[in-house]
Length: 238
Figure 1 (cartoon, one colour):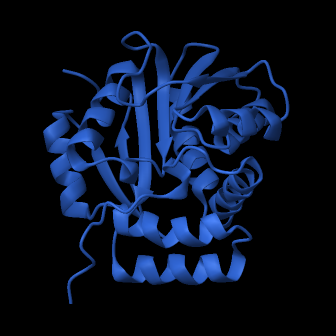
Figure 2: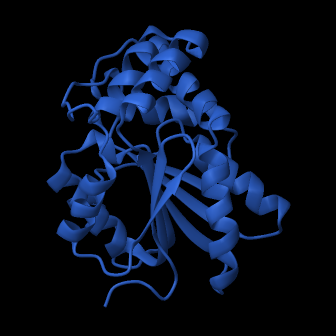
């Protein structure tokens, strides 16, 4: 039996004008899910492997589509525990989400949050040592997703890690059940299953990478219906 067809249904996360309290609860549910299903661990595991290969300090990281900024906060806490100097810039298109993120994370000189479009990153080529982007590709069409990957590749001097959900019926069923059991926000109960239906299959992601024309990108299948697109140091632009 084949998987579900990709759908372009809109998520509340993408829709301006949400009630600030409800939007805050949605971001909190996303943060909990990131913790529950290893989104933060996934990023930190890759950084543990990548950062020793980067000599420059402080290491400059960019988090594309940062949402509630829980990933920048986790990266800074991890780096401090390992005596690694980092500075992290988190970008998001939504000013409402950035306002909530600034209130949610502890003030840190190592984290800067900026409003920016992932399709047109306002940074110079190679401005960051590492770029991370989680659970965001499915918010774009396949051609726009390829454009986002090109922008990430352009500003990533050494490496990038882009991860998302893989669309399938088991992933959809898992998201539906998870949001019914754990989500406290009605927005999350809607967006969780919809995000799976908007996600890409592995063949579609391979096509996206080919369209982006980025050499030497590794595609890693991961537990919990996740996938990571990784460019390692030394595997960058030709």
